[in-house]
Length: 386
Ligand SMILES: Cc1ncc(COP(=O)(O)O)c(C=O)c1O
Image (cartoon, rainbow, N blue to C red; front, side):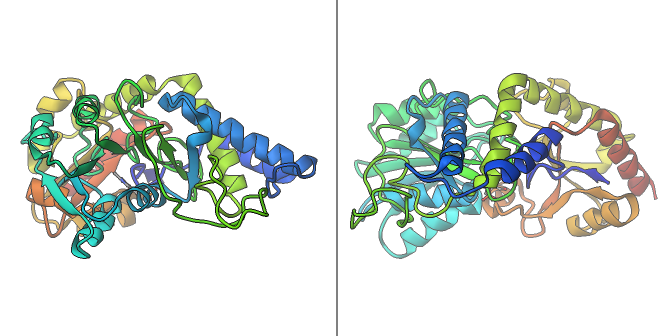
């Protein structure tokens, strides 16, 4: 099978990740707990080490403010619902994934908040000047994706962050697609809240994700419960990370995530990005006649520029095929896994003019080879020529 759906989740996970999970599960995969037995302390130490690695990757000065969640959706809900209060105004964009737009839409419909949605420019980026213009005296939060999971474009996070900081609001970045591919520095980019998926480019298993909470952000806990300590306290203990983390954590998953983050820190995120861009350019170059396809956000001009401004993710359609139909042919006749449809980001597809059917998305990862993308291009050549 050729797997080109890494934007949904990376697969297969690196051997090192799978081995680390297996080793940890056999040796000390127990419920962590402060002051508990030796194995519990080992589990807690492993989790804390993973917090430290993530804090290093994203340059957060206080590792205890790395909060583990189920996935990016969970982290985004934790940030949005833990922060916003009646009367708050939020600035966001049309490119957002439903994991940002749905919680905001619900709060807006219930009359709790007001929302301004910035349109994307023809190059599929948000213009920071539009963010600046959208500010009102009630703006408390700007919520923006780092990398669109539909267009693959990298958003000007640092520029927006500066604008948000200057106006004393908070900046939430959805790094589900960018984490592990595009460098992000919470300090230099003025990011207050960073939500990530552990199971995509960070190479962890499904069921992992997290929220990094900068010092300017004051959240209410989204999930309250057991913390393995402070049991006398009638309410959630106020110290991080336990303030935001009730219940038994995903110990086995975090052991895998720790290894995934170690791999990225060793390899360097910039090299992952270069690898993805190279693959995208090889893929486009191996198509006999790319003009047979409609490309959304990644035409030959962009490939010719070395993939500048984007990650290894591209959406396209082929005349005569519904997106789901083309993906089904790739799957059933060529054993190539891609993703068709609206990719949980209907606003991004409306921006591209591809709603309601969407497009076919090819996305690569650190384990993808040039041979994989050339084989996929040849399959598309055959389908387009038939
Ligand atoms: C931009 C973006 N945000 C959020 C999510 C949600 O991530 P998760 O599936 O980890 O909840 C995704 C997943 O595809 C995404 O691409």
